[in-house]
Amino acid sequence: KLNKNPKNDIKTKTIKDLNELKEVLIKILKENNSKVNLGQINDLVKKEYPSFTLKSFNFSRFKALIEKSNWKEIGFDRKKNPTSIVLK
Image (tube, rainbow, N blue to C red; front, side):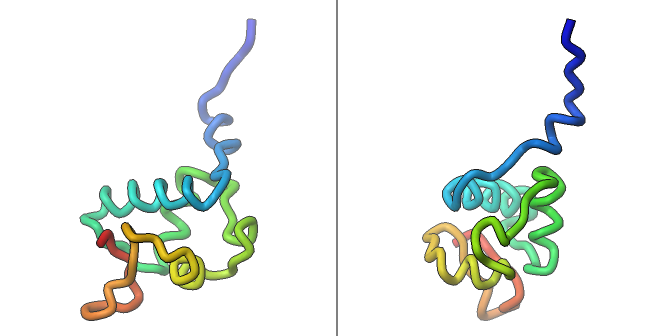
């Protein structure tokens, strides 16, 4: 009989590529009224994917990753708060 512990499963959940990361960010933004401070986004991703690191995508900051990704669905709230990402 296998003893499967769901708490251990969450530690092994990974984000495989930028498309999957985009979907995770969209989900987080939808759960937070379509706006999240850049300082909080890493913590919110790590809450569900504890092994997540930006370095695995060759970035050290979410701001740079979002700028380089050119996602249509996610951008910066430049008018009100340039340190927040929003759903477009």
